[in-house]
Image 1 (cartoon, rainbow, N blue to C red):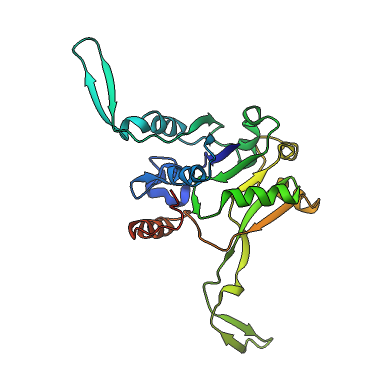
Image 2 (image 1 turned 60 degrees about the vertical axis):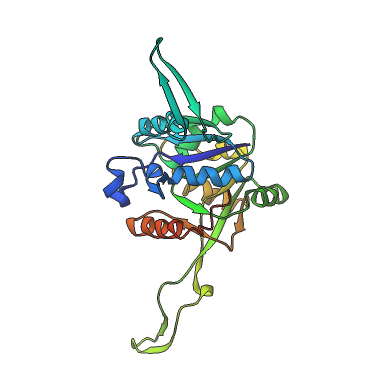
Length: 257
């Protein structure tokens, strides 16, 4: 089963690093967050990836082109021409197709552009800027059991502040500290999609999270797989630092491999 990774956006909210590299290549613990996401899927046996690139897409291609080289000890022999021998290399069983899906293409458009590579198969899809400890096999089984076109993973966004009840005269009627149940469910990505999804995407200007998902919801074709475990996106520099601290602790929840 193929895994589509949306890795073409600008990542403007992490401007310090995304000025020089696409956000999926921003590193957590010395490796791109894209690598972390792929290792998650690979742990569950999903190793066929389509990377929907755009902004600075050549850097993503360069990274994969040199991945095995940089992960191995190497002998370069120039005595007769040039030969390269790899020693003690670590190699992931990945098949990676990097597609330039356009600089300004929206999320839905990027998915639409790789339709010829997916064909008539169910596939997984996620964004290139968030990690989690979702059991991918359970997510897939849930999707198949429900029999709908699309399933997204939802997580509860915890309330950050205390909760107040204000009356018409602006007097605070009650106050209590936040708790986990105050949060709303949000789309965490990590989706499973049937090929019928392509009928919901018009073209490059389609934002996947708008008309396609809204229409699927209206038609009863969108399911939510509620995840109670760890999930963290990397939209800001602060969130990057959070992920760095978690990784440095040696107990990162998404590290199942």
